[in-house]
Length: 168
Ligand SMILES: [Zn+2]
Image 1 (cartoon, rainbow, N blue to C red):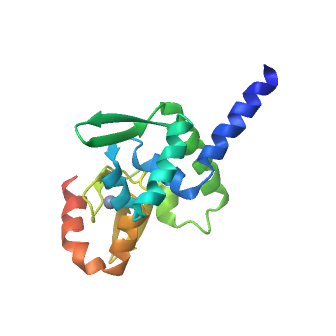
Image 2 (cartoon, protein in one colour):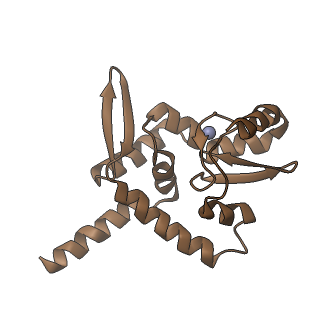
């Protein structure tokens, strides 16, 4: 029995052991999302994403809820978020020089809720997956998909995001 728990624990960590899957957990930490929404945010091919979601679901990390044709994904237990945050805190402390000021500051939760300039999703600096400083403003993104889109053409989003930052 004693050893069985270690086995189960390592199985769970194996399911979590992928950067995209860790990112998915961050995306749905405070909201449920459809596959389509997650796909846009991560900019991943559908087949690839389905596989990741399947692994997380089989491990009991995420749960689903069907509404008509849509399937919504959410976190199955709040401790998955807590555990993820704890590990991230250690890593940010240890890699302070590689990770930008913004990434470090976001753990301190100093800045209020803002919105992702690309998709408009509400993100907080503490929990957003990506941050970027552009023309003196700090922008926060739900995931790598939006982050990459913004980097390709910041001018396209600047006006909208500026408003988003101010109004929240
Ligand atoms: Zn986004």
